[in-house]
Image 1 (tube, helix red, strand yellow):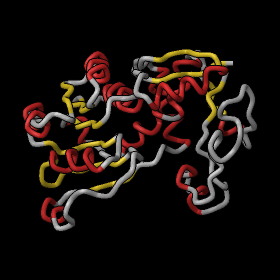
Image 2 (image 1 turned 90 degrees about the horizontal axis):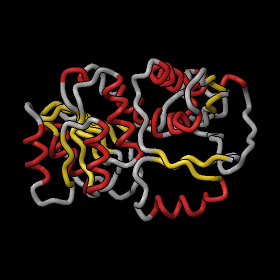
Image 3 (image 1 turned 120 degrees about the vertical axis):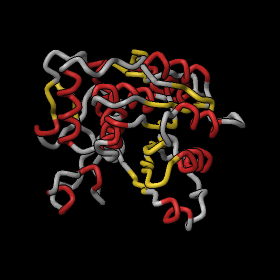
Amino acid sequence: MCLVYPWIGCGVCRVCRDGHENLCMKPRCLGIHCDGGYSDQLVVPHSKYLLPLEGLDPVASAPLACSGVTTYSALKKLGSIIRDEPVLVIGAGGLGLMCVSILKAMGGKGAVVVDIDRRHRDAAIAAGAIAAIDGAGPDALERIAAAFSEPCKAAIDLVGSPSTAALAFDSLARGGKLVMVGLFGGAAPWSLPLIPMKAATIAGSYTGNLSETKELLDLARSGAVPNIPIQKRPLSDASEALEGLKAGRVVGRVVLTP
């Protein structure tokens, strides 16, 4: 049994040759640019994209190829700070819950999670978050500051809206780093002079590469990555599952099986 790495590029450009196919300008991502995302069969262009599960549960492992490697790659961009300082994580959906679990597996200090949905906040606490804060609350910024023993040095925005980006940026101490992952949409909400004045680093992170996926599977095999809440549903329920995600009724992830 194998996990399929889906973020495939053209294979010949410099980015692909350097091992970052997920950043290729001519992507061939499975289930997005190529057919197969909602099928019981798909064509994989090379065996190197087939990663042996070696005893891992395929249903629990399926999200590792998307929300798992996406948050793992984002956390790696924060460097060694994750072992010394808590990380502010905006969003406690499937990405956020995976981020909390993987952060723990990487030896991280912990996560302060922000979400507007109480069920998601409760799930984040169950996953091991230090605190879970209502991002829609008028005192959200003050409550975030109170959850950190020191000024916040690292944040990951898994939503990517103007309001979440502003909250993450405003929470950063001078010299802090914000990794933007979410694709909700909108425009940057902060004044440009604040970036140099705050000496802040803002980095984008898009999925993760093949090597990072292999590293994440190794973590999972060690038993360090807990399973996030997963609903197992038949492939015929794909449309209903997507509607549930859109309406915010899903906590964790839905895995469709043939």
